[in-house]
Amino acid sequence: GAGFCAIPFKQADQLTHDSLIKRAASLVTDSSTSFLSQATLALIDATTDYSKAVHTLIALQKRYLDALGKLSAAEEDTIWQVIIGQRAEVNDRRDECARFESTWVSAAKLCETAAEAAYVSGAEHASITMRTNMQVAQAQVDEARKLSAEAERKLAESKVMEVERMSQYVTSLENKDEEEVPEAYLRED
Image (cartoon, rainbow, N blue to C red):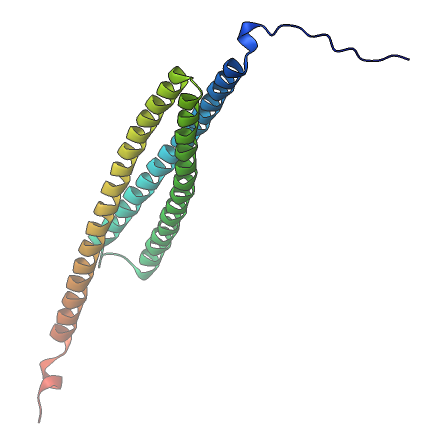
C-alpha cells in the first residue's frame, strides 16, 4: 500500500510563527477598518437624514403657525396630517440613528481590540494605522452629532414657539368671541 511520508524541511523565514501572526493581525486591522468605515458612513448618513427630517418638521410647523386662523378646517386637517407624517419620519430617522450608533460603537470597540492585538503581535504599523483611522472616524461622527444636536435644539425652540403662538391664537379667539356677543345679552335686566 501507499503511505504518507513526512519529509522534514526547513521553514522559510517569511513563514515563522511571528510573521504569520503579524500578517494575521494586519488582516484583522484591515477588516476592522472596513467595518468601522461602513459603520461610520451609515451613522453619518443616518444622522444627516435625521437632521433633514427635523428641519423639514420645523419648516412645516412654522408654515402652519404662520397660516393659523387663515385656513379652512379641511386645509388645517391636511396640514396636520402632513405634520404627523413628518413626526413619524423624524422618529424613524431617530431610531435608525440609534441602531447605527450601536453598530458604530461595536465597530470602534473591535478596532480598539484589533489595534491592541496588532501592537502586541509586533505589527506596529497596522496598529498605528488603525488608531489613526479610529481618530478620523471619531471626528467625523462627532461632527455629525453636532449637526444632529443643533437640529434637536432648533426643534425644541420650535416647540416653545408653537406653544406660545397657539396660546396667543386661543386668546385672540376668546377675545373675538366676547366682542361678537351683543351687549343686550350681557345686561342683567
